[in-house]
Figure (cartoon, rainbow, N blue to C red):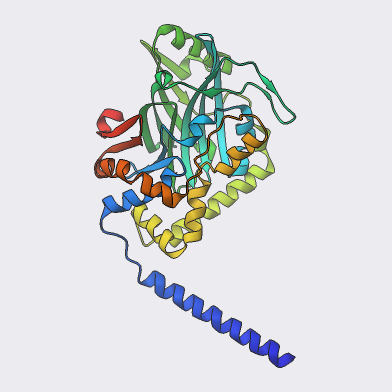
Length: 354
């Protein structure tokens, strides 16, 4: 019996040594694709399934206009439970009434897993508040395409600019991979252009009710500029808990691990290609972690929003189906800015959009 155990341990040890040797040989032989346009196409094919894309020129990830999250809408329940997606963020919901609808324009900034990022989201509804066992309040729905607003933000960490975004959108986002930040160190310079002075004034009323003073925003015609540093609105308890501190520690550690594992490469595309080649399971976890569908599926199961439409096709199928759309944009995206969406299926020079 002892001999059998010893033989088994020796076999397991040999297999482990062989596996480590094979892995070292594998990563030793890895060479990133020199064709950066092809690299960009590959990563964007993978990200399309998650509703995102990567901008090579700005070195950030961003949400597509036609992403599946568009159907999800928004409510306070999302903010309260964002910690379970490893998001340690500041939330700033601004609510107001206009055109017979209740509106929500919300700002977010903070640490999203192994990325530092920021968001501006716009939602509205004509419906009454809902009341369930797990959430009671306003559930805002997606806005119509003709209600998208021209907006922009500059995300800074201290005095250093991390990224800039500008587009006519419903959910303007930007995320920097491998960068760890404390929420209190981040600030946003936000600019939103409204279609008329009535909507602009209604938004300003909401901004004032949230606690913003005139020194924190300015108005020029129908454009409102906001300086977002410390949130004025009440933050979710989950974002101030011990769990949040633990999540931030995990995020910090994961950023260090990612940067250490990919320190040989300076280019984000090379880093991601390396991770995909050497540790495909980790790569898949990264793709799936970007606003994971499992969280939104729970929203549907809890009947907060029964109308969320999920794209059930696989990543592999999605790559094939979207190849033609992406190919038409990808070359310009590497040198400028591309928004690969059916409603805006063309590339525009970054200077026109940012």
